[in-house]
Image: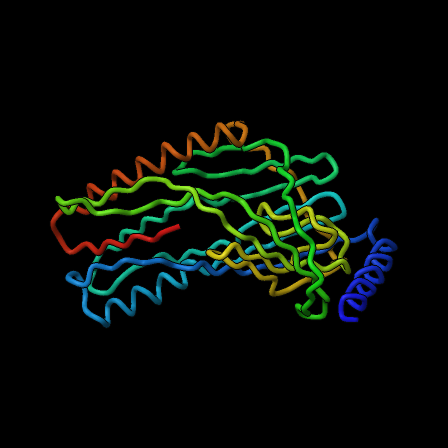
Length: 279
């Protein structure tokens, strides 16, 4: 009986949504929270300083984004956060984040199945132009409400590269990339019949309002449909043009350089606090 009710509800929402699909547009605000695997050297700080640093890091990894969308296009941007990690007493906080990097502006066109991703990578701007990679979603029957919208569950899996940290006999820290399978859980609403979502997520029969890969959760905190001033969706054009594979090679090289700098800083004397965050 529960399955029948869920399927009937989904069918009803899809029929209703098809009537408004052509003109739908909106602005969604998302907030992200990242699970942190943090190693702090207890010989470099007391409990109070550790608590302060953990609080600052938590805030640093709670980001906010806006997604402006219409039926076929979307633009995803991070809301600028000027606050940087710091510590009392003039100490320097070195933050090393093992991640593939974010995007400054991500434009997607689901009709043409393409995207333009404008990135500022260590002071140099790139424009990644490539096709949208379709995710293999498994649609579920489970539902929950997010705000005023009824959302359905969908899951997918993907392989992700993370940094493995190890310490040798000489106490030198070494990192190497390893792959692990991530399970992605998304909640989408057919009441907003667009295939968009935060970041690279999308391809479902409704706007994604929440998504998690076990390490990061992105949740829609505000949604305005058909805003009075409309939406401003302009494809980015600035930066060196590369495809995704070329950009990944450049990113990997920069990450290695960053890791070498981290290792060099680790061996220096002084009041520096070192923090390593796993991806």
